[in-house]
Amino acid sequence: MVVRVCVNGIGTIGKRVAHAVKLQDDMKLAAISTTSASYTLRTLLEPEGPLYGTDLWCSVPEKLKAMRDAGMYVNGTLEELLASGKIDIVVDCTPEGIGAQNKIMYQKYGVKA
Image (cartoon, rainbow, N blue to C red):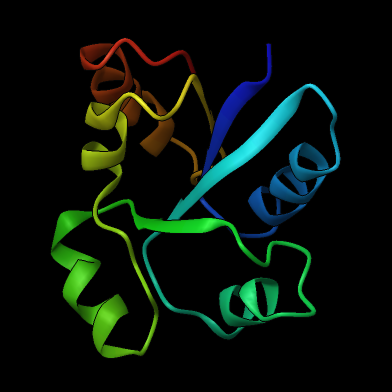
């Protein structure tokens, strides 16, 4: 069974975790989630980037419009992704303290973190 993984927080650590997950045979990097359309994110998702083809979601609903306005194709919010049942586990790479808040949302949808 291939585990479907979402990496939440694509910063210094998250981008490396996401790339490592993508290289595994027993895992599928099903999604990444973040809060802004940074230059780094664009580079990771471009055709030659290591995360090309990975679905992008917005971690914070209030920032979804800004990401789309910046030209990013964002599927929706992280909570919508969790509710869809398309993810088995979230690797939370958000800044200190945020992961603990996010864990409540992960538990609500029965997604391991």
